[in-house]
Image (cartoon, rainbow, N blue to C red):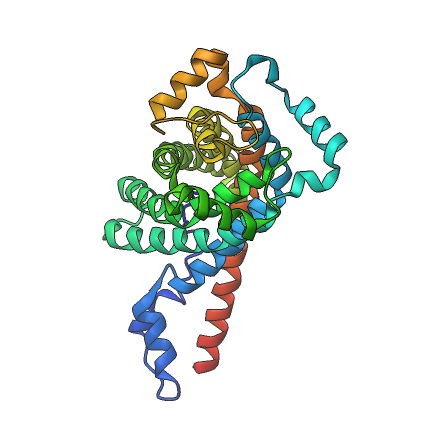
Length: 334
């Protein structure tokens, strides 16, 4: 999920380490933290925090993601269009609770590394592009796009496997079976059939998400500035939920295209000759009207609103933990 590392946790005791008197006992750790830290954390700590946040976010909301995938991957026949309630009822009736979690292993294998890449690229880019202005919105936006391109390259193959396993009557026995069959039948390119669409979707998603998040966060802090520090997790969660919901609604058509491309030819899903966004959108509109390109917008919003809140809260909590670890280690060295 696209997420900005905020500066609210900046600890003045952590940042000027390079200016403090170096103790001869353990200079290596201090030197490393002073030269390689950003906002008081080492970049591997941002990676771990992001990886934990991504896994918690996606694993918690996985059943909602399954419902969204089922609704978006239906063949383009209007008579098959289902509501959230119908999709949930169908899954529970035919497959039980297990059906909601089919493919969660693939999600776990992809979400952790992808979010680690995302946060490391984002923090590195932001540090480089921001210069002397840590609140530069252009630098944040560009850094988010760079992070999205890199993380999607890691996540897209497992996302494709995950979505194919989520389908009703999926022909695959599990993650390994799906990977083997896709390689044999479609080649390595089959894993990246939706990569271009995914990047084009996540770029505006990131832009809308950041803009909404920053605006909502400022508004919430202005309501009660005296308690902003005490309620920072609530502020992040609320602002993140608003940002996630709006960004999800705006980018739903591209998400439908992504799902169609990843699941094409499986379980009765349409197969597209060119694989272009225009080709997929044209087919959906021709067969199912404009409502076809908004399939799954309700569960998508229901997914991204709490998912963003969970991700922000978990990420900030993990960052706070690492701040304490670094502070404790530095104090011991002193």
